[in-house]
Figure 1 (cartoon, rainbow, N blue to C red):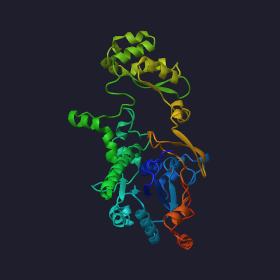
Figure 2: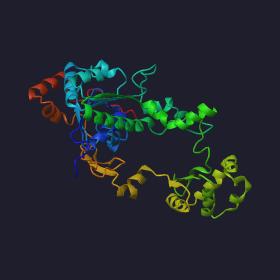
Figure 3: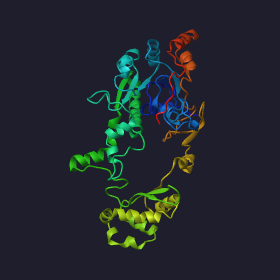
Figure 4: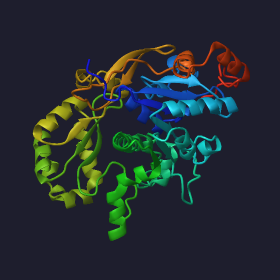
Length: 415
C-alpha cells in the first residue's frame, strides 16, 4: 500500500458534534494520527444521537458518532481541571494541527485558545469553527447545524407555499463547512512547510452556508425577488418534481430543462393526448398550469417502477432519478463497485458500514483501518506512549478525576 498522504501528521482534536470531527476524519482516513479529547461528564453531542445499536442508547452505541470518527484515537480527559489543562497543553505541543468547535470564548476560558497554544507550539495550525464566527455582534450565538439552517435562510425557503417554514432534513451547514476547513488546513500546512510558521483558521459555519444561496441573494438584491417556499418546483423548469411510482412510498424525480427534453418526455410517455394541448405547449404555459401538469405526469409514473422509469427517461435524454432509501443505498451496485461503504468492527456496535471518502487519490488511497473509538478507548496508548506518563501518574489522575473512567450521570439521548 502506498504511503498515506497525511502519514506523520499529528492532530489534537477538541472539536465535537459534526462540523469539526468531519475535518479530522478526512485527515485520519488518509494517514494522520488524530487524538480526540473528550470526557464522560461532557459528552460529544453525537454520542447521544440515534440511531443506536439495537435501539439501546449508550455513549458507545451511536452510529451517528461512529460515522464521523473512523481511524481516530480517543482519550477521556477533563480539561477543566488544572492537571487536565496541563495534559491538554502537552498534546498541543505534540500536535501539528489543533481543532476545536466550541462556542467562542470557551477555549480561551480554558487557556487553550490560539494565542495560548501558539506560545506552547509556534508552528501549530489551529482551526476554530463555530456557528457565526469568533467576533461580531452575534459571535456568542450557540447552537448546532439546524440552527444555522434557520439563520442562513434555508428554513425560510424549504417547504410548500402554503406551509410554515420547514426544517431542512439534515444539519446542512455541518456538511458544507468541513470542506472549507479542510482546504484551509492544507493551505496552512503548505505555508508552514515553507516558513515554519503556524496559522489561526477561524470559520463561521453560517457564512459557509450562505454561500450556497448566493444566486438567490443576488436575485433579491438586484431584482427584489424573494426565493420563498415552492416545494419541489423550479423557476425555469417544468415539469420539475418528485412523482409517485409503483410500490409503497416509492418515488422518482424528473426535471425537464428545455423544450427538447419536454418532447423526449412526451415520447417516453407514449404521447398521451393531453401532451398536445396548448396549455402545455411552452414552458411558460406549463408553469401556468403546473398543478394539473404534475397530476397528469404523476398518473403516468404511478404505474411504473422507479428504477425502470429512471433508466427509461435517462435513455430518452430526460434527467430523472429514483428516490433511494438508506437500504437502497447500502445495496447500490455503483457504490459497491467503488467500495464506498466499508465494514469495520466496532467494540460495542460490532460490524458496521462506514462511508469512505467520496474522492479517491490514485497514489495514496485512503485506508479505513479502525472503527470509531469508544470513549477513552486509547487512554493507555496516548498517556503512556505519546505523553510518557508513568503508571503512578495515571493512577493519581484517575483518583483526581482528571482522566475520567465512568459516566457519573444518567445517559439521556437527545433523540
